Length: 418
Image (cartoon, rainbow, N blue to C red; front, side, top):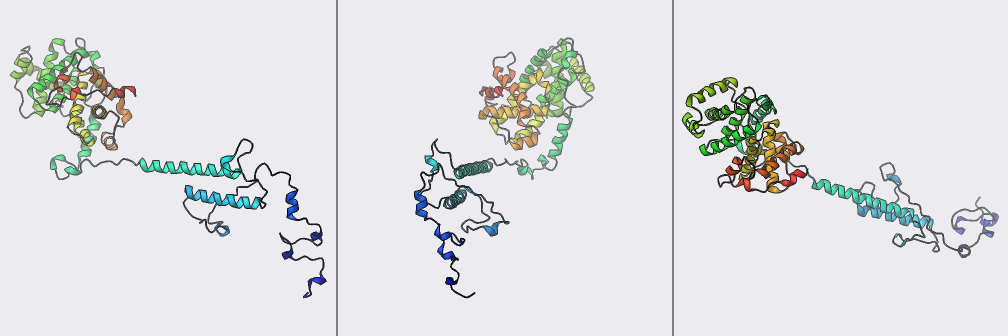
């Protein structure tokens, strides 16, 4: 076994052959590589490169022969290009060992040659990474809006009752339907209609302004009128008496200094006597079962304006919007909380010229933007005709310096397109 090669003339050593072991006698018939290359008439139409893709996981990490590519590494555009470039070079070297093989440039590919497979994989992979990067950037931009703690500054104020303010408004929201009236209650009135109601409330808004009464008084007055008319038939000549008496009751409930009965008789041009006012007061308070503690739109306005981080212009414009609704009979179909939220939403749109409703407003009002659109559109329509309509009491009131000329703001007409 230790003899020389002369004893084994049919055996060829591996070092004498390029490519490994060959059977005996093959050396006499083997042609040179140069002769093979000369016999090639033309190169193939495209490089038959195979794109070998492998998933670098813990399972096949041991077989990773390219130490330049780590097994666990975030996939980025640069890293993907490096991976694909290495794979391209390796595939080309494996498939094209000769200089006579044709290599096609992807940028110079024409209709005569199909795109090589590895180029298609490269472009698809890079496009996918670009899309992933864009989605990540959008996720970074669209950060969820935080909800502001609107009561953080009032924790040391005992009058703000921060400990149970949320419970109070949850109760208001629960009971507001009990103090509301049917949207079609005028159908049971035989001598008055919704137009007469609008004239009465428009006049009472002017009376409220002249007497310099509190805002709460106006909203409670309107509530008492509607609740009374919803259950008690009234002739038209007594309708103004109902309005004056409702304001008297609201003043006794809300005001510190209550107007005397004679002042109310005088403001109604002495159409009624003192006794008639007192008799109507007894009838109304008994009909309403002495229930004057009701959540009016004003109650919700105060809380919702705080949630909207209100400033003076927004506050005045919001109250202008909702007072326009007091005159309109058709707005009775909306609950007080929705009226308040929609008024603030419409005011914000009027000031900014675009829709805006924050997460903080959603949390404290329990209304999303879509739920406010219908009501806000009606408010915009009322705003557009406030100066030219027949009932201009609210427009005159909010066209003064005291109310910041809020009525002169340009209506948010773009909301009507939604």
